[in-house]
Length: 510
View: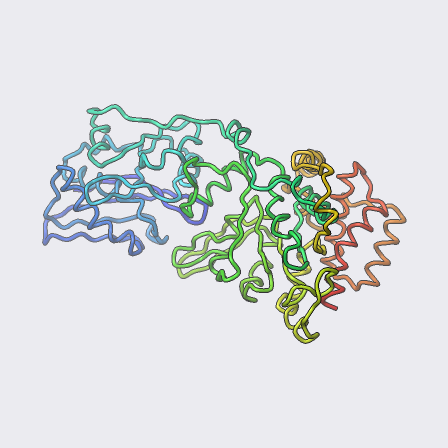
């Protein structure tokens, strides 16, 4: 007998429907899974056999064929166990086939029939809802991720036997209760570091405020102990609050990675800081299952790379395309997936191997050859994609001892929000949301310069021998500074400050 059960799988962030077809025929007992199923999916036959028996049902001693359609897409994750089990029970008439109609079944089975949580349930449910599916059976352990789906009937199940009882009407289902994301975002606003605790570093704090206001990338160069890491960790506290759409999109990526947490939603902007020994695959994503990497986990947040030259050259070079396009495409055999990767890159580094080259508070022991070799680990194209370069020198004692109140993160954030509001009103119909994302045509339209600003930019371009990319990024940064200043037209002052953030690399790498 043949039974068909509806399930879902993932390709990147997009879910697609899978028809689980179970056919039982006379013949030597066997269990075959077809439809481009990978190892974890093929192993379902052992889990399903034990789960059915240990749940008090009969497992047929027949030839069982399970087809996962469409057959031209890899099935990687073990989300089909529950659907396969119910298909076998329906095909052997231990469960009415009609009861399965209209439901999507998701879940991995343990050998005793319990239903385990699965990764990626949030993007699966959202994709299924977009395609018109409204009724789901999902693992109860995934409950936290299911409450954000509106106008859907999501039944939480703990075991195969409970799922059968619910379908037969012998047990009342427990359903997920919808929650409003906006309310959760307003409640959860805790950050590890506040700008009011950072002494001195006026220029660095100003640069980070501009970066937060326009979504710009930042490189901090300075000696050890100057406060580069503390500055980077404070940046999320002045970034604008996440919108519900951003929270959902970021949470989908974390759901696939299996690190979403007990809240079931990401409500504060991510701050990812991979170690400098991180491989290329761990940064960009990949592996056998094309999982999202650190740059995707930092989507809508901050990616902090401490000691930038210590990362492998190949890993750093892979950042060039995501920094430009905001997405990462992962190509593997029989599968190509795309993950969003639009983040603010904050990088820090020492100016030389000992860390004291050019510092007022330490004597550099490095030779010119050592300094040149150290700095050459970073390519020009990568540096060109970083909008703001700043020097962060050691803080003086008088600055550390100064008890004058500093602007706290909430005060700075208010200014950032005001600038972002201007950008949103300007760009809301253009598909971009901050100045750093503007393409060439929008730069030309919205980065209007006064005659004095044009003359200064021309002079700077010629003297510093800037690239076309650097020219565009100076205009974007100047546009952000003008937004913070409340100006509609970019003046000489804003161009001068924007250019000052592009001179450090010319000094060190010339």
